[in-house]
Length: 461
Image (cartoon, rainbow, N blue to C red; front, side, top):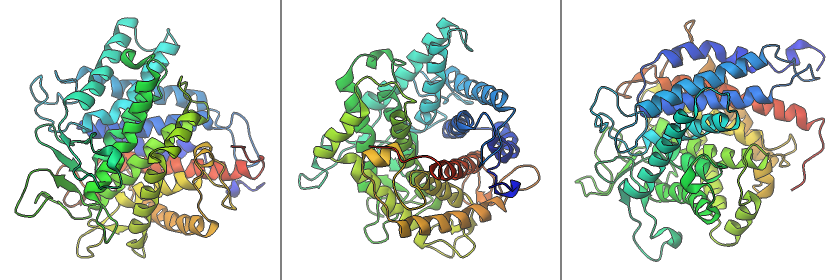
């Protein structure tokens, strides 16, 4: 790797052109949260950047400055979400509406920013000289606790029926509704809600009500996986293994699904949200196992207990692989996908390629070139994938990556994503910018992990 062409590029150079369109966009609650999550993923990558030149990459002389800058972006995005919380404690919802946030119809979208806000709050608590005073930190704690309690106690739920279901332990739980006015499940919800539940569960003390309640934290972490399994139960097509976009608890002439824009159809971006949401939760666990977290109850023991009882983590992992395989089966020769994944009459769309590539690169970063687990979570939970499967994923992801990158223009916009504000035709979107960043970050981390694995002994379980 002596030649510069074999060096891993600096992550900031890869993503900096994408930031202005993202940070300049008008954003609804889920877009604010997705933007913050992209910046958080970038922040973690910067922290992992080498401080000095290595055989596989140059150091970033501006790393500390870029890290400070991303933290400032994170603070700004999360601060505004707290300021614009509705009276029912849903974050980032008071946009051109009353104090109740009636302009935002979602129960789950406002929780999307929760993981990033928890991270910033913990930074404030750890560094008293940080970006906010104690009064503001208290406001953040109360806002995040309010968001959590809204999801747990007030949001509508779709209750699972049938005692013979294989996930019988979920019967008394109920899937948290994506909408606040009526029980309705959207594939997007898997990205918006479960990660916040997992992040709170593994947070050291940011939410006072859960600061010293180990059993409640364990239950909350289990709930993150319960929600994914419940959404899968309602949305998965048993034949295609793809996810329908919307399930409505109320009866309609079309059956259990709504007859809205996409309804039971396999909307590409909706399926991308689903796999992205699963990976988001798994990465929270993986980071904790690597020592980034500070939970009190012990994640390894929880994983062992879960494996013996419900095996929710294993079921969610298998769901991720099943859905990812179903998506890749419909990949076009150019690396992209149709807006409705299995309907070639719909327009060709860019964002699912970014979302799926990001997830695949995250998976690849947990295994070495011989297919052996090197990530903490896949090692601890024994998530095994053979070398041939990983190689097929690599090829698919690289095709997605190259095609999606070719859709960027000189302004830094990703073109051809399912576009805002109606998400019914090609265009641009804040989420398209965010996923371009997350794709670049995930690929960069994969390249770094492979280079480090080549010179570092395998970790033990």
